[in-house]
Amino acid sequence: MVCLSLLAAATLTTPVLAEEPVGTWEKREVNGMQLETPFALSKSIDLAGNLPPEAKEKIDAMTSAMGGGEDNFIVSVVTSTYKTGVTVSLDGAVKGMVNGMAGKIGDTNPQFINNTIKVSGLDARKGTYQKSLPDGRLLRLEFLMVARGQTIWSVQVFTLNDKTAGDMARVLGSVALQPAP
Image 1: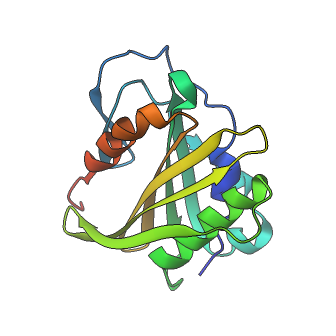
Image 2: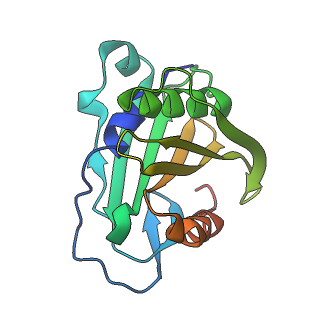
């Protein structure tokens, strides 16, 4: 199992938009996953070249697509494909992602919710992490991770505005995977 704290680095960077936010909710496809967002997502960016050596030994490919709107509402989709023989663990991926992201804001003991669910008939984890920031704002992360074979799809939705909680739920509730080829 690989610690996926590097996912946090990918998701805490400023989103690169493929185009201006469209303002209307549309279904979008990212690496075999469909989801509904109110803005366009960037084209998938290859992250494999930026992996540390210990991760490169276990991961064949890693891509990220992201976009953002008003009120610091950010959606990130990271797709990681592990090499044959590497054990894929959704719980390990969740823990690595949350720990890495929390570490970026100084939280060394993050407390988060992580529930087992099914998405498109596949094992998945859905959860929430939130933390008060030094400036008084509340960072809220809602996430969904789905595994099929050696691939994990991670959808992460960030906000600093409580008014977007319904939008976060809408994004995650819309996630579906295309059938395996």
